[in-house]
Length: 460
Ligand code: NDP
Image 1 (cartoon, protein in one colour):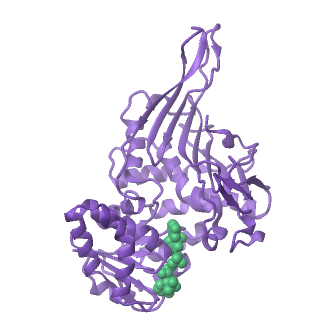
Image 2 (tube, rainbow, N blue to C red):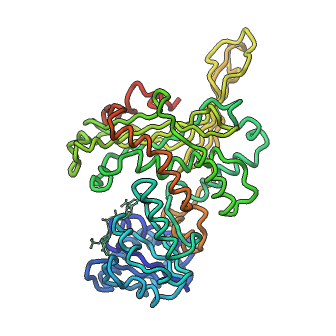
C-alpha cells in the first residue's frame, strides 16, 4: 500500500496537470493499492474533492479498458480530503495516519511550501516519507540552500523529489542511448569537432493568464534555470558507468559545477519581451497589456544565455540556451553544429554547410543533416537529412513524475546540490539584468524572435 497526499488540492497544478497525469498512470499501470488524499485550506467535503477527481480523470476513463476503468474508479472511490492549513501544525499528524510510504506533493505556492516545511519539526515525519517539491526551488542560490537545509532535517536526500518535468524518462535515456551506444558519436563529441550546441524551447503560447507566477519569474528563471541547463548536462556529461540514479546524477552534477556564464564575452546573455502580434489567427496583446502584468518589472518573455563548460572536453564550445513565449512556431530541440571539415577538395561547389545533429524532444526525433552529392551536377553539394522517430512514453509528463515518486526512484528529479548550482549559473545574469546592463529588446508576438539574434533563424 502507498499514499499520495496532494497539498493544494484546489490548485491549478493539481487540476490541470497532476490529476490527469495520475489518471494516465493508473490507466496504463493500474492503481496498485494507491490511496489518493487531497488537502487544502478550503473546507471541502470528500464528495467535493471526488468531483474534482472525476473531472480530471474523465479523459483517461473514456480511453481505459475495463481493468483500467476499475482501477481508476477504485482510487477515486477510496480517496479522501482533509481541511488543513499546512503552515500550522497538523501536517505531520496527518501523514502519520496514512498508510506508508506516503508521498507528500507540495502543489502549493512556493512561499507556502517553505512555511509548511518550517512548520514540520525535525524527525516529525516517518523516515519513508517522500517529499515532492515543485519549481521554482527557491529564488536564488542562497534560498535554495536554506530550503535544502530545511528538507534535510525532515527526510533523507534520497526521498526528496525536486520536480523537473521537462524531459521524460524516455527522452533522457534516448539522449544517453544515442550518445553512448554508437561508436561513431563519442569520438567526435568534443571541442575538436563540435562548434556549438544549442538547446531551444520556443513556445507558441503567450501568457495564458499565468501573470501571477510568470511576471515574477520570466523566461530565464522559468525555463533556462530549471530545465534547459539539465538538458545541456545530459548532452555534455561523460559516460556514467551505470544508469543508476546516483551515477547519473553525479555526472549531471559534475557538468553543472563546471558551468558558468562569462558576462564579459559579447552577447553572453540576451533578453526580450513580446509586443502585440498574432500567432496563427490568434491576436496577442502586448505583454505589458496582459492582465496582472507589472511593466515596471521588465520581465523578459524570451531569454538566451551562452554557457561555458569549463572542462577539457568542452572548453571553447558555446552552449546556447534559449527559451521564450509567444513565438511563431513551437521548437523544442537540441542542435549540435559540427566544425567545418579541415579541407574540402577544391572543385566542389554548393552550400558547404556544417553537419548538424538535431535531437527533438516530445515528440522525440533525430535528424542528421549532411552535405552529399545530390542529383544533377556531380560536383555540387546538396543538403540531405537522415531522420528517425524515437521511442516515446505513453505517460503524460506528470504521469512520469508521479511514477518516479511512487516507485521511490529519484532518477528524474533534481538533487539538492544540483538545484543550488542551477541558480549559481544564472545568478550573474539575473544581476546584470536587474542593473540594466543588458537591454530589454522587443519582438512581435508570432515572430521568430528579435531579427538580429542568430537563434531566431535557427530552423534551417
Ligand atoms: P495555485 O495558486 O493555483 O494553487 C495553490 C494551492 O495551494 C491552492 O489549492 C491553495 O488553496 C493552496 N494553499 C495556499 N495556501 C495554503 C495553506 N496555507 N494551506 C493549505 N493549502 C494552501 O498554484 P499552482 O497550482 O499554479 O502552483 C502550485 C505549484 O506548482 C507552484 O510551486 C508552481 O510554481 C508550481 N507549478 C505550477 C504549474 C502550473 O501550470 N500551474 C506548472 C509547473 C509548476 P486556496 O485556493 O484555498 O488558497
